[in-house]
Length: 174
Figure 1 (tube, one colour):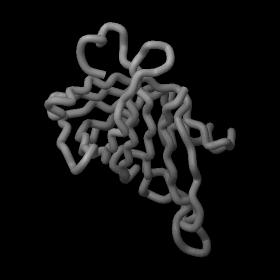
Figure 2: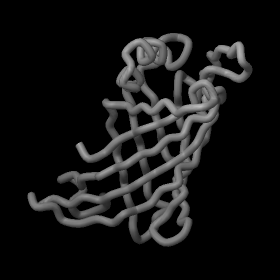
Figure 3: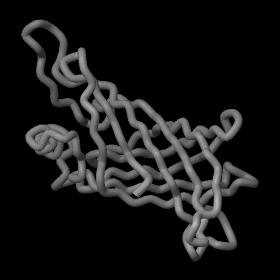
Figure 4: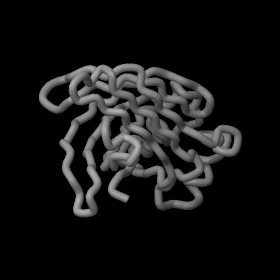
């Protein structure tokens, strides 16, 4: 409820189209004493893409882009965590979109953790990355009559996570 996976991409080279994924799950195994031993896994329902424009969302689900019927999941699995300043980390991992897996690095800020009013524990993270959609086989585009292209190649990703410590992890990490 307090987490989101958002993105934006240039449209017609002059404006930004913003969107999000509304259905996803993830697991964080955090080792505060030794961050390199931490792990992250996320599975995103590709059909849950939402840009607040139904026709565009349908096109993004189609074989021109995510091909969500054939490739229903977008997945991220961390391969390494490195400190990068105070409460900052580079989380390296493999991102799979449309059946193509490529390495990416998330710039992560750890906001800390605290007890919630219901006796649980929560931790906050913000993450960003940028990727070239063509690296994942998302090559559809349209050349504009005035020059340029309809859809930019760079996709900027912005993630906000409020993780809740599982009951099974009460003695261990978040």
